[in-house]
Image (cartoon, rainbow, N blue to C red; front, side, top):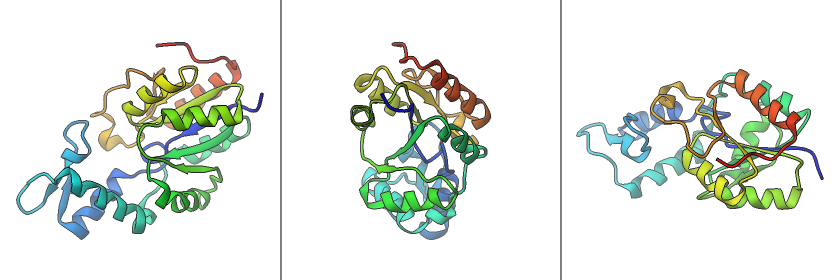
Amino acid sequence: MTRPLVISDCDEVLMHMVVPFAQWVDEAHGVLFRMEDTSFANALKRKDCGTPLEAAEVWPLLDGFFRTEMARQYPIPGAVAAMAAIARVADIVILTNVGPDHQQRRADQLAALGLDAPVIGSRGGKGEPVRRLIEERAPSVTVFIDDLPNHHHSVAAAAPGVWRLHMVGEPAIAGRIPAAAHAHARIDEWAAAREWILARIAGNLPAPPL
């Protein structure tokens, strides 16, 4: 049995994303980002006429942002210090849905901040990648952190013994995203989140079913 494992998302957990993304699509593409519900795609509208973008137009914008504009991103308050504290007692893996094309950019982005952890650029639900990491590493206890409820559902199905923390570190959207039904806790600030994670690691028990 190896060390505890913390599997963390990046955007809106470790790094601000929607605010710098909104600034860029406005400046470069004439697109306004106004999140009025839980849908990221519905938040993107053409500045000149207010028409929502088609679903097929959303990923190219995200891809362009991650390809050329990641330097606009900045850390969620307390995230880097919390990860440093957690790394003293657990292994950390960053599981982020930027896809394989942007995996190295994300690793370089985090390493520049002092967070030198393996990065997996995935696509789709995170349950299977989490399950595979547990099979590979056999951790004594695992904690998963993400801002999107669907990923907590995915992990709950594929790896039910994982502790799941729902965190939305961006205040501009936190109030519009309900607590994930398949997470064990919702904490949006890192000071409290760090203590919750460390307590789960110290307890060294699998997560209970929800």
